Structures are given as structure tokens and as C-alpha cells.
Length: 355
Image 1 (cartoon, rainbow, N blue to C red):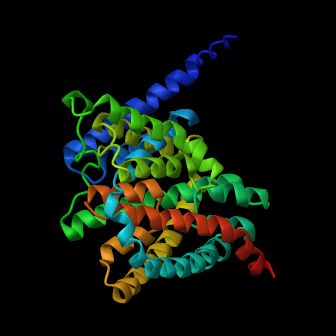
Image 2 (image 1 turned 30 degrees about the vertical axis):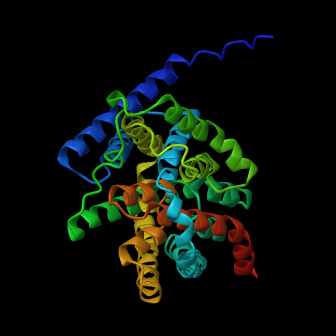
Image 3 (image 1 turned 45 degrees about the vertical axis):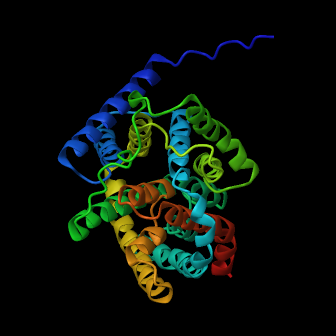
């Protein structure tokens, strides 16, 4: 029997989506023309955030955001090449360092929120734990934490870390994370065969269900990434998603992050932002110290390790690595491991803290 068609999107929701995409595209385009770092994501994030704080109400539906995260996951998975297996062994020492820094960070960052902000212990701890945003919000709220505060802190943390690292690479290393889509063909170029598009689409569509079955952290991103990596390792395709789609995905994801500030109380936001900056500085300092130590231990490049340890989002840090021509599988794998460790160990560590 035929299923009834889905209900139409209400006019108000459609207008809010159009507003978000127009603002995001305008900000991304402006950043791109100015040669600023990671333009399509950061430009969209900034313009939509400013609009939201200014009283506008842009919105990005969750299904659209999930779909675009799948596109980014496929793009990141396409960086996994057949020679990857031979390089995994040397990554183990750096992952051991990652385990240590991931265990220490929540206690130091959480102390900032609890002692300087006067927050309750649950909200402070899960606000200072650099795991996946959705995962930390769910776990922290279930234990009695303030959901809105935890969401706001993690959103600000990702924004601060992404902007800080992208600009820092530009100013100190003379390298611009200008566009993660620059290395892949455009769909209009005719470089994609139907088989290429079919494999990429299959990885994107099947990725999230597979990720949820495997209980992967951030399954909407990591599931497509793993399936895309498998298709590339098997030699089924050698291409990333088309450049047009990658740019759209970055605009949507950046805009969605900016919409989290809709309805935010300016006074509360300012107080939280000050604490979030302090905690982010601590997290970045710990990541830099760990990267320096791991570089001395393993001989791996400090900048690569810094991206792998930085407490930004998996997609955002991997995109910066891709735009800078760094080892994306290394960066992405470390962030997947970090999120998985934090999600698995955060409740246990919190119980130890209470005892």
C-alpha cells in the first residue's frame, strides 16, 4: 500500500530555513572572497550567530543537518587510502597520550565553571568534558545538569577552538585553510561516473544506520566516514563528493551551529562566554602540551598532533586538516577515539569525582 506523502513544511519553518541558508551562504561567500580560513563553515557560523543574537530566528531542520553531516563524513572517509593499514601501528603511542589528556581535561575545565561560575557539579563537569556535544548534553542532563548551559558551553567551545586554530595556522604558519572542497572536482565538470556517485550516495545513506548499529560516537558522521573509507580502501571509487555538495554541507552545518544562539539571553550568554573562553584556553593549552610531548615521543609533527588533540568537533578539526593538506585519517581517527573514550568513561569519572 502506498504511504501518504509527508506533510508540507510549514511556511514559518520554511522561511526560517531560507533565512539561515541565505545568511550562511552570504557569510561563507564573504569569507571565501576575503581568503579567510575555512570560509564556508566559519562564515556561515558567524553570520547566522550574529543574526540570532540580533533577534532573528534562523533555523536548520535536524534531518537536513544530519544529511549534510553524512556528506562531510563521506568526504573525510575518502581520505583513507589503501596504505593506511601500514600506518596504524605508529599511531598507538599518540593515542595513549590522548587517553591521558582526555582524562585530565574535564577536571581542570570543570573547575573553572564550578569555582568561578558557581555552577553545580554536574553542569560544570559535563560542560568541561570535550566529548561529542549531543552525547555530553544527553548524559549531563540525565544526571540533573542544566541542559541549556551545557549546550551553550559546548557550542562556544567548538566555535572558539575552530576559529582560534584556523586563524592561528593562517597567521603563524602562513597557511590558509581556505577551502576543504578545493581538491575535489565539481559535478558540472563531468568527472563523476554513475558508479562513483552511486558508491558515495550509498555510503552517505547507509552510514548513519550502520553507525548506530555499531554504537559509534556521532554515528551520523562516523558511519558514512567508515563506509566511504571502506569503498576507497577497496578501490571502488577514488573520488570525494562533488565540490558543490561539500560547500553546501559546510554552509548548512555552520548555519545550524549558529542557530543555537536563537533566543539566548545576552547577559547569560556573556557570562557563559567568558567562562567558556577560559576553559577553552585551558583545553587548548593541555592539547598543545600533550602534542609537544607526543611529538617528542613519536617523532610525528607537532601541528598534526595539535589538530588531533584539540578539543574541537570531529568534523571541524578534520576539515581544517583536510584544507591544510594534513593526514586526515590520523586526525579523524584520533577524534573518534577521543569521543568514544569520553562518552564511555565520563560517567565513571564523574562518580569517582563525587566519591
